[in-house]
Length: 197
Ligand code: GLN
Image (cartoon, rainbow, N blue to C red; front, side):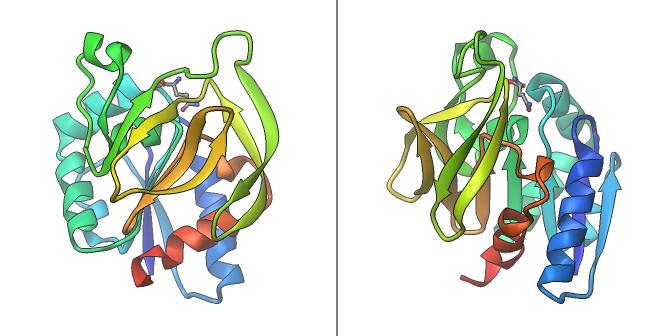
């Protein structure tokens, strides 16, 4: 199994390590490739869009054709995960910040996201979260977005305060937090198997 991490910017190396750990735990033979160029995602069996700055990542993936490759993989039913800024990019609708900055979204998750949803006072924090299909998970939030609305096709996996912070639509998984920043690889394991169910 080949997993691509879109390494345009952000916490790429942490996702590489977490994915390797998950493959090992699941006893799946595989490789993890970080990429900034077109041509790798299309030859992969799963793809992760890390956190970072959504406006910057959006520009890069749409100008380079990586966006089309992600859409193609999703269409084929392969696992696609976005964390933090990656969640924003997966979503169908953004907030006024997304509109003001003309940030193009992939629209794979029928959800509306709000950037920096937890405010300036709480830039980063860690909380134990109950995540459906996974269990209790220590979730690290960094200037995190959140989902404020979903369609009935989207399964809500975790909530915090009044926000949805993890959701899934078939093979597409979006998380407001950073599962790659803890040693616990269970979310990456869940993600690698998501195409099967
Ligand atoms: N605040 C960032 C954005 O809206 C996302 C933060 C992150 O990915 N850690 O683009």
